[in-house]
Image (cartoon, rainbow, N blue to C red; front, side, top):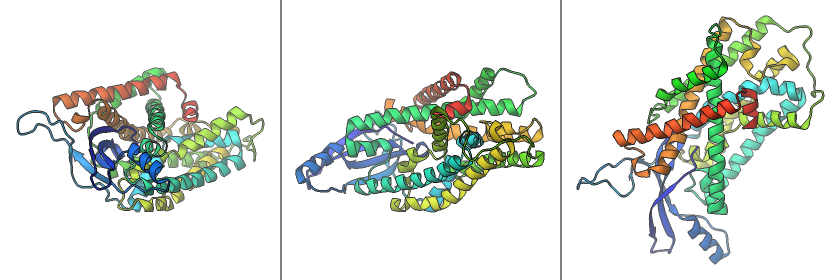
Length: 419
């Protein structure tokens, strides 16, 4: 969930002639981290010199706090102070966080993906993509065993392929995070309109209202109660989905509903859009390294899927199959639209709106922290007036870009497939 670092100090280890740098990183939920590690250039030199396999041994990760002014009244020019190491979480806690963060907007499109693909392809892809996710997590752990100071995907690219690859990954991550937040804002506007469906306003107006709702919430600088936020996030989306399923069961299945084992007239574009949307539902790899940085033993990370898998896969299959069974080829790309207007539709929409607000807050906070770290690294944790104004600028930029994306592609199903 972070992709940028700022080198703030560099030294030379006298014992091994290895160049050591101290950098800052935005970790899980925007937490500021101080990382002491060997430089990627130093490691590359060691690899060329030794001609054998290599494992980095210099790494230290600690949380950081803003140091403010020194005794002389001048601004500190060095690092924020490193305090207690953040590696305290067990794999069970990380598994719960993964469930709450990953199960979100993407699940709402699955009944439509079944309509586009058919029973067999959609079911196979959900299971196979989950297995691919587990496999890639194991590969990421193996890379971190060699380079334990990795905190983000960009770090991994830096150590394995060099600075150019790291910059490329940073750009990709920025695009991914911005489009995801645009998708979230689109959903907030749509869920607001659905909650108040008796109020007749055009959709761009609802998205603008969502911007005004998000703006004050995004001024929170820290997410201290992340566990509580994750629990509320998970409960709200599950409750919204359960209401839709209950409504579909109550209304029953129309006699004319058609379903297919493999969708008729399935073309390549439709196939890739559906496949992309299913990938998005499992799209947590971008934050795996940040989650590992929180763990007591990051090698246990693959065990998190023993919690995430039994929750994610069944709920994805239930949402997709139930929606497709009751609505067939007419299943909506926005799961809540499978319900008729009424109190269940209104309540489910309100729950979804709450869920998406929390999701936007968490991801938006992370992206804003990354921007702040890039443009003003010495004031990332400054709670004074200047720090607050800089934070206001970063959050405003994130919100405006998200708003523009939600208006450029104002259809939830299409934007989700594009991501």
